[in-house]
Length: 288
Ligand code: UTP
Image (cartoon, rainbow, N blue to C red):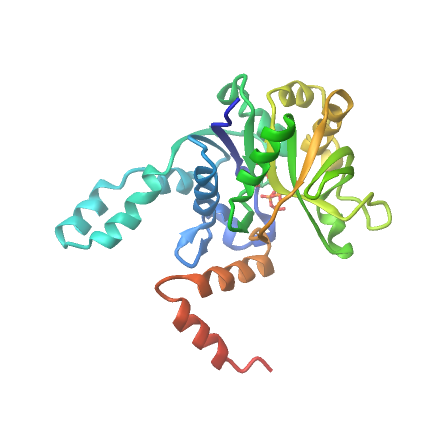
């Protein structure tokens, strides 16, 4: 079945980015000139996604406004003949069919995904975490969709991470099927380095099947008192095959300060308008 729908959970508090996130959604942080969440939706659209559901919480209204029409601004830009800016401003409103749902209480990623149950219906769908921006030739989520087409079922996007970072992620234990695919035996959420079953971390990209909702319903609160998606996927592994795709591309965690700065430097250097000047500026910096 063709995958047409994407869910983007964006209801978290973003405490790693305080004080910025006191009143501004972290998903709206600008990487050069575009909010982080627009990079994510562009990736989904490039992979053939037509409908997007963003899971929000109170105070995240700026996200809804960003993907809405802006007739007053459009008229000013039109009247002053600023066609390039008009195109940029309009782009976000026409990327995909975007809908929203509120997660009233932040009860965890599993619970946030559960808020998408009626949007998803009976189709397989993708989940993209908005903190994880991937710079790649083939969109990261398209690489997972290819694996779904080949093997069917749930597919988690993974990459190897350094030992000291294992405790930040869901870590899988799996058996290789081909050069970039593993069949997952189990998954552990945020293990210590000594407990981790491998160095393959799940990095913000998933192909899920509608069966996940039944698994979430059966999942009690886990680590941190939250309903963990990892626990629900572990239940699914007991019943059917679940795969990991080692996706190609450089992934930036824009939910933490250093990852955000790294993403800004990467996309700044590649930017058509300011890239060259930015590079010269960086080269002139005395970094000692
Ligand atoms: P994180 O725990 O990484 O994000 O959740 P956070 O809570 O926003 O940030 P910090 O840790 O406080 O800085 C991973 C993803 O799951 C979403 C978050 O918005 C993020 O995209 N999430 C998490 C929800 O939508 N609802 C939740 O209840 C928890």
